[in-house]
Length: 138
Image 1 (cartoon, rainbow, N blue to C red):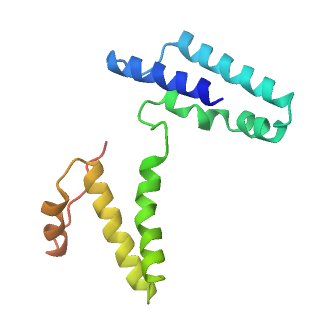
Image 2: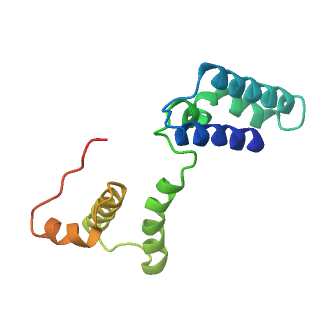
């Protein structure tokens, strides 16, 4: 399954580098066929439960091939959560719920600014001065 998904990612990257925003129907059909073949093979072995999960969530696992705006991995989301977990590990948590909420709001703002390609150090003073920067719809 990993090899099949990586090949599908290569197809998406190739199409994107060619300036396309979607895969051709034929390419999507080949990816779907390969996916079903891997699931059928896995069901015959000891990984039946995993194969069933892959089968049930096929659309979720292949969403990156249908919508190029969806990333192949969840690394960006994991990076957003990592700082919260690190803060909890280092300090043992927050003393108050409002302190945790402020921390999460600021981290969320920083993450959004970075994703929008803005300079964080330029936007933080604006935020604390009460001139909150608004996200641009993508």
